[in-house]
Image 1 (cartoon, rainbow, N blue to C red):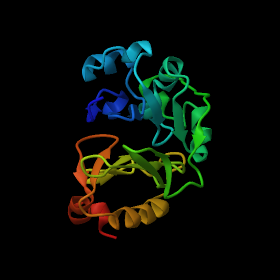
Image 2: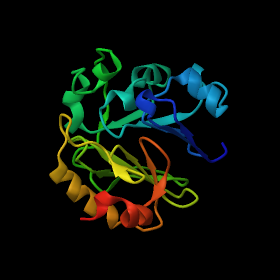
Image 3: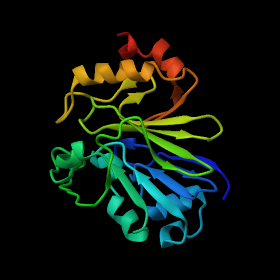
Amino acid sequence: MERRLITVPYGPLKSNMYVITGPSGVFIVDTSVSPERTEEYCKLPGLSKGECKVKGFLLTHGHYDHIKFISEWMDLYPDAQVFFSSKDAELLGNAYMNCSYMDGQQITYDFKYENMSGLDGMYIYKDDNIKIKVFETPGHTMGSVCYLFEQMSGDVLFTGDTVFRGSIGRTDMPGGSMKLMTETLKRVSAFDPGLIIYPGHGPGSTVEDEAKYNPFFDL
């Protein structure tokens, strides 16, 4: 399968979903868009029928606008791994904490996952074509994580609502902490300056640009 990284910017509250294809199969970061709309946008025939080689769903945190369609995706691909931190488990069963109430809905979730808590800096998937490492990055929520994809055409970091271009995720919601976010930003600023960032909302950036121009990095 051709290696591609596709941004699908149609999640609730304009959140980004990412589809990464390649020889290893398909990985999806934040299941915020339906399988049907994703297939149409990405031009991946059979994706919404369970006919593609989807290997994993990588969830950056437990807010509704990032996990809305996780159940539909898991029904289609029951053998795919789901990566998520148990530190955000309490968000799943509470519409206020997972923010679905902000969209006028009362949605809760209950799904099995590979727990990212305690795996900070470790590889969670690797083969001859790609390696994926997780970093625990609390601040927006207690269970927020970032995923580093290696062996792409240059490494890329999916930051969820931790870092945006020129901004950061809110810290005034349940589970948020500006103190923890400050420590997280110090850590992100120490990454390779050329590392490409793909955030949960808005356009991409680099570690170097955020360290220079993002006012929240003025630590």
